[in-house]
Image 1: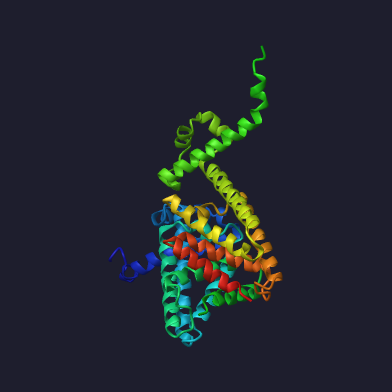
Image 2: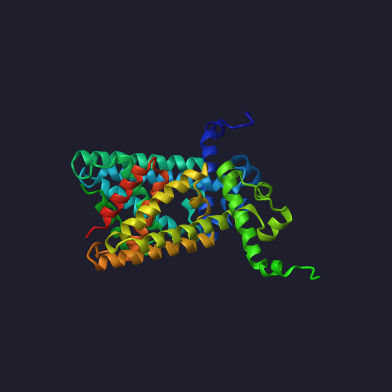
Length: 193
Length: 193
């Protein structure tokens, strides 16, 4: 008999990914419970039901796990924004995306019970890249809105994207959904022709 | 003869402070030369002409030195903003302060040759406090401008301050002074009644 059943070897690639996903899920749980600074390798292993040896095969240390976890969050978030954009009408698209980004910023911040995650991990290369994707995506939406005469054209769209993304990062320190709505309205007011 | 000359004991407190200042100056030089991640205790000691034993009496590690250095920068920056505010006319004050904040953000970023300092150190308690001071200061200026009818009154000044400070943090990723001027103009447009 084959020592490795075919069904196993077929799903080995999936399994590898599913272990990684399980590690990142366990990391999210640990961050929620103990805060960013309370996450440990053994805590993640235990929470995820993963052996320590396996864990270290995937990630050398807590910092790299947190970076991978935040990267996954940003990528997931970006996918959500793209989905929201696809569903919205042309005229609403930019506002819908900015509102979604801002409200998610507030929720993410609320989940951490600790230092600002984006700030702590901002320097990780993967995260920087994901943020550039986000700015690029927002820049495209702004260019489209500017072409329709809905957004000012005296400032290049990439600069307006930097403005929007940074202004809406402020949502993380606002106390309520209503305050975030006001932040979105003020940010959009800055974009008007 | 007194083993400690009077002139020395009189200036001991000053000296203590001047050693701390020298350490932070040496840190600035080291960050400029090697980037944030290239700063070491021995590098700082050497650059500042300070014995390692003395250095460790002031700070236990590089992270605490970087936090103290960034704190000093934020406090210095805040003092500059207050001075600029005092010199400006009522009508110009908010714009002058926001422009000064944004241009300094760009310069600071350019000096680091490495990961975003504010992001890396944002979690340090002293820095958080200094940022709250900054937001409070901007909030007061906004409230004064709102009372004169120059700024919208449908959003509370503290929320508008969060908007301004975050939007202008974007200056750190802009390529030129002109781009920062445009960012300031866009941010001010969001504040209009």
